[in-house]
Length: 169
Image (cartoon, rainbow, N blue to C red; front, side, top):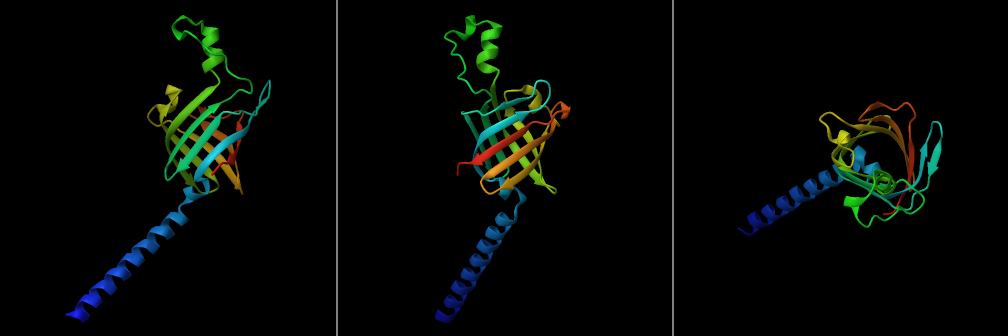
């Protein structure tokens, strides 16, 4: 009886160890693992005429598992406060809310350093349409992540924006 109990405990322990090993191995081998963490945007380069470079202070991007969340202010100066949004002019609203970007959803990584994002919720309703996605080429070097836009929900990027992020944790 004691031998049978010991064998059951030993085999149960072995099965648990195998399951734990498979779980750790599969998560470490996931392609999304390179992007996991909390990041802040340090630079946004917008080519075109006129070309612009933003170094925003207020940003946060979180990649975890298959999900992401990004909140950014694409302005280097503080946005104007609006005391009464119901009475604000269109220009006042654009100045305050225009530079604000927010989006969350799922993402996947494919070969060649390509990341595809599917928004579940976004400031821009076009990003939430069925079949809409944003595609980026990504490069990770230590605690720096560089995303170069390939495609937006509107179509291929004629002037790809490049976003550089620094790992926070």
